[in-house]
Length: 324
Image 1 (tube, rainbow, N blue to C red):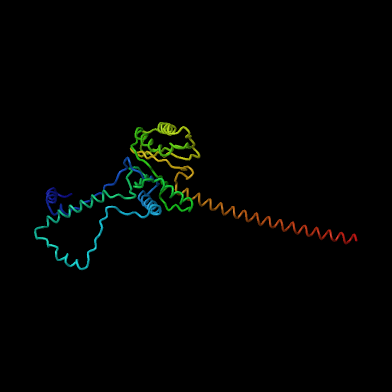
Image 2: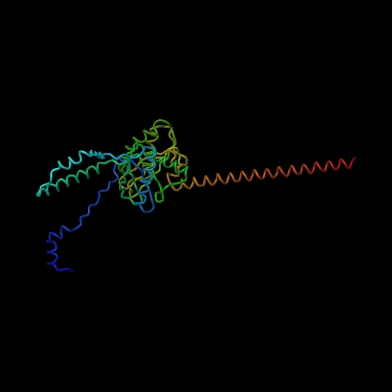
């Protein structure tokens, strides 16, 4: 323990206070109503999950929409060679007592850069869900479901998931507050897009995390009534539904989306999609080998039958010669 007198001297020392390190924590964006993006789940290592989500989404978004062009990027003007020397001569030299003004200018420039970075719109941005093993990537794309379907179809055909930590990657069309009035209103706008024109089969998939206020039976019955009110021909099918209504409740937020053939696509589980494609390829190889084996067996049987017919013909010839 240090004496009180020494502590007071250290506290009053200006040099000691100026040498203290200042740590600035970057403000993370929080999941808010009105956003859309991609909901990902993982077992461990959320940082690696976020990195894999960025790699997946940027890779396939570049294929579909082209490379991303950053906004608010200042254009660099290259001065001519002849004008460079004149510009250096025309620059006024700072006065000896103008250090405070320079510091103020630097602070203002830094504040302006921070403001530009905060208002910069990125194609994909990680958002804090405050829920373990749950990641949400906000996007500026108008239709995240189209990009999600393209990713799932490519993984199903190639058999390469390109991920190790991401379990499910579900596109989300709407985010609202986790209360029944807000959920019904946002779902109404969403169902006009999917259930109003043609009758179809649907299922409701509900999950909740760190929220016990929203009851499963209540929300399922109200959403089913809302879907039937849009079109009387809509029917429930829990096994082979053409459209699936995704409801994910995370603390005080609710994620909504309507996805076609969600159950057939293994609920957008990337590992299971890659495994099923591998099994299909293995099954095709086995079927080809079986067909080749069957063909070889048929050829052998035909050869044996031809040999038997030849032997029978020889025996008949011998018997006729003996009779003569």
